Length: 302
Image (cartoon, rainbow, N blue to C red; front, side):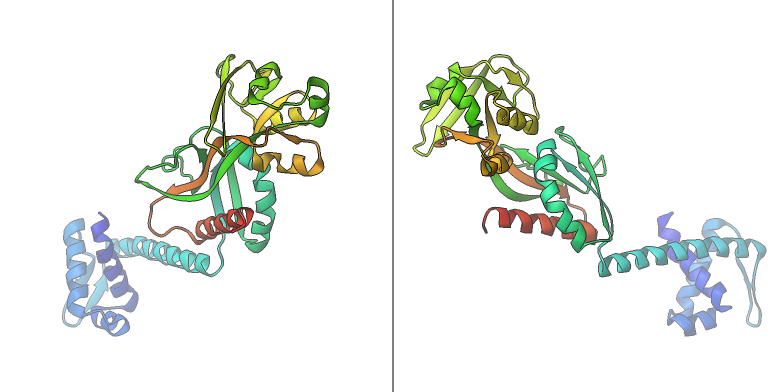
């Protein structure tokens, strides 16, 4: 059916200009091509659209009805072109973004205000969830993910932003009450706040700059997959938490958190964005991706 769209277009031009010769003069489309297209449309529909002779040109009643539908199609096509042209001048519209909870709570409040100020015609629809969204089937424009390995889905484009590391943090009040930690082995005697919530008995794996690895069996006092909650609990002296550096940064600056065993760390994952490999990505999505690249480059000091 889509192959007939050119036939409808040519038919509408002929009716609009009142004849084949007039349409040829107005559009530079050869009269022979216009005639062939209209004939093809008549054959396909099985009706006569135009009564024509060497001296007479008249559109049939059914032809006028078809012309009105053809006009709707032409107007819709023109509106689509106008929309793209409009978007190209000023990025605008809704961007549907999927983000993990920790990124939404910690990073987005810092980066969104300046982006919205720069692009006032753009709106963000944020899907905040730690689940792995199906970018294509759920109609997501761009998804931010933190994974130990980068997605390799051939249907998605990947942009890497930064590698996130985790360190141990606690409040000074907690350390004053429960004692300083000078050796990783001492952690098994401390109150641990854990992001992992699937098992009560857990392993904590740390490594240092000398490529040494320490694997500890721990029994956390709190287990919950919300890093912001764990950070707040650590600030209030509830225990020692393994937190991404970006999330603990404000607490360190204010003095509410202090590092524990700063020479030991654990990989958290790679922050990256994925989006469909479709052609003609909307300008609003393109500038948002560029903005994320710019923002995280500054965060990393690049």
